[in-house]
Image (cartoon, chains in turn green, purple):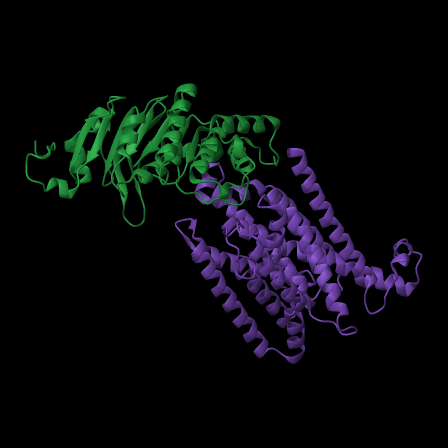
Length: 274
Length: 338
C-alpha cells in the first residue's frame, strides 16, 4: 500500500475540517479527489503533504507515519503540483532544478551533473525542454503546468499529488497535462492523487475516485461506482444525466439546465424524471 | 548556452569587484587633504610621511572597512528579508529592527554604558534592541507557529514608530552633552575611532554572509511561496527563525557602530536583482559587495561635497538610494514582490 489514511480529521481555525476520512491508495494507482467547491479536497491534499497536522488519526506513507518523516525525506517521496504557486523571476530550467533540492546536502550550493541530467529528462518527458530558457513567469498557463510537473518529476517521487492541474486551461492543455500524468503512471508506476473539478476528466483518467461532501468521504470506488446519478445529484444538488463516453466507455456526466428541466414532460428524459 | 551564462555571471561579478575597488581607491585618495593615487602604494608599504600615513591608515582605511562591513550587512539583511517574505518593501528599517537597535544604542549613550562597560557594549546594546524588536514583531505576527506576512509588515511599521517615539522621548529628557551624541549618531556616520569595533563589524558582517549562504537555496524555494518551499523539503519555520537571527545580528551591529543609515538595505538588493536575477546563490554575495561599495562611495561624497564640513552619510544614502529604488522598481517588472 502506498498511502493509508486512517480516521483522519484535520482543518483550519475557521472551523472547517475534513472528518474521519479512511482511504487507501495502492501503488501505481491514479486516485481522483472530486466534490463540490469547499468540500475539503485541497484540505485533504494538504494533510497528505504534511502542511496540515491531523487533529485526529494519521496518514501512513508506505506504512510509516507521515508525521515522523523529516521534511527532506518526505519531499523525496511526495511531490506536489500545487494550485497557483507564486512564480519568482527565474528560468524554467532553474525552476525545474529546484526539484533536486531534497537531494542536496546542507552545504551543497550547486547542482551536480546527475541533477542536471535528471532535470533534463524531466523536461524532455513533459515537453518543456523547448522553453527551458524562458522566464517561468512569462510562459502560458499550460506551459507553466508542464514545468510544474517537470519539477515534481525531478524530485523522483513515489507519490505525485496534483491540485486542480487543469484549472484555467483549455481542453487541449487539459488533455495534454492529464495524458502526461497517465503516461508517467504507466511508464514509471507512479502513484497519483489528483484533485479535479471536472467529473468527466476524473472518470476518464482515474482508476478510482473519492467523492467528498462537506468534509466527509461520501463514496470511493471505480468511476462507474461513484458516478451514480443519485449520488452525484445528492452531493452537487443539481440534475444530471450519466451516460457513457462512446469511445472509452467511461461514465460521462451531462448537466441539465433549469430551462430544459422546466420544459413539458416528454421532451427530455432525465434520470430524475425517468 | 550554459557557458555563455556562466561567462555573463563572471563578467557581472568582475564589474562589481571593479566598482568595489574604485570606491575604495577614490575613498583613499579624496578628502580634505588629497593624496595622489601614485603615492598610495608607497604609503601602504610604509614609505610615506607620518601625516600621509595617518590620513590613510588611521582615518580613511578604517572608514572603508567599516563602510564595506556596514553597507554589506545592511544589504544582506535587506536581501534576506525581501527573499523570505517576497515583498519589495521589507528591510530592517520597515520591520522596526533598525528602530529597535537605535533605541538600544540611545539608552546605552544616555546611561553611559560604553564608559562603564567598554566600547563593546554599544554593539551589544544594538543587538539587544534589534533582537527585542524582532521578537516583538515575530510573536505579534505569528498565529499557531505560522508567521503572516501582512501582519508582520504592519507590526514592523508600528514597532518602528514606537521605537522612533521612544528615541525622541529619550532625547527630550536627556542632558545636552548626551543629546549631541545621540543626534550625531542618529544621522549616521562611518567615523569610528575604535579599531576593535571596526574589525568586529567586518568579521560579523562576513560571518553573516557565510551563514546566510547555507540558506541560499532555501531562499530561492521561498520565492515560490512557503507552501511550495515546504513541498521541496524546506523546514520553513526553522529557516525563517535562523534567517531572522542573522538579520538581527547584522542590523544590530551596523546600527550600533554607524548609526541609522537608511535605504541601503532597501535599494541595493533591488538594483542587484536587475543584474543577477533572483538566484540567492549570486544575489547574497552581489548585494553584500554592492552594498559595501555603495556605502563607501556615499561616505566619500559625504566627506567631500561641502568639505571641510562633513554631511551625515544617511543624507547621501537617502538621496542616492531612493533614486536607485525608483529606477529599479521601474525596470524590474518581475521582481521579488511582483
